Length: 277
Image (cartoon, rainbow, N blue to C red; front, side, top):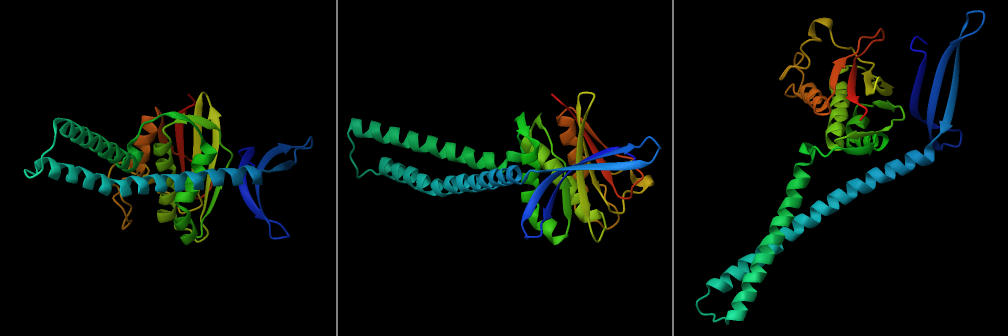
């Protein structure tokens, strides 16, 4: 009621036990007599949400498949190169000039193919270090985050509420890591029996502003200035204490920054600001 409006994507189960995805918008207003009222409009986006989930699963399967193919091809190519080397060094074998030329061409092609396969494997391993900025649908990005953290979300009995998001020019692998780190932080440190993480978005003065909040115990005032420093850990918390440092670095790489949002509600809320390029 204080904020005046909200927008949320939520899943419900109807009386037939069918699940539906709704985009729910709420707007607060006052009547002529000064009484506070709330109007709510829900739009069924089940089909759209299902398409996004299918895209995420297909992308994940394609990535695993391409990595598997590259890995499986590496050993046969290495065997071919090794066999060609043996033939070239075998003094008992006599090759014509043409055969030697063909042998050299085969070895060069096999070596090039091996290098290409190695590059594919390295690209898969180094994906999170990529700075390939592109226009990306953030709804799909958050669905990928939900997919990647599905086991942790289920184990923590956590509910993840996300508003509908726009497309933005970002480095998808980096921003995906940022949101994953923030959600994992809530799972580790919120200390709530019924954990709820909510992600809101608005555009403000040429910026995308993301609010990532939970209903946990929050961050004590005396520690708010320390949470973004390297290796900071609260008490006996697990990890290296680099999660928020990495998140701040990712925001900086997008020409933005991250800060703690002061609010009256309990829990912790992080604000991520990046330019709406």
